[in-house]
Length: 69
Image (cartoon, rainbow, N blue to C red; front, side, top):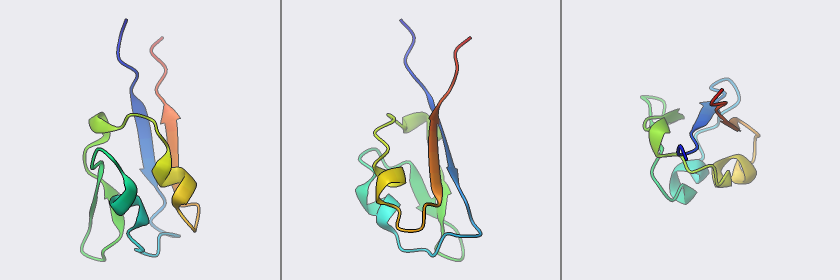
């Protein structure tokens, strides 16, 4: 059985660089850009726990399971 993979997106227009997603991601998917806004650096690490999506106060993050078909 193939490992599930996930697509993670950050909306840069609404991201306020709070760092919550970075602090709570258990597998370090995110880093920051020159404006200290979240950037998806290692999407292959995402386990789909959606902590980033659930904890983002501005609803900037979207996590979806990739379709394998």
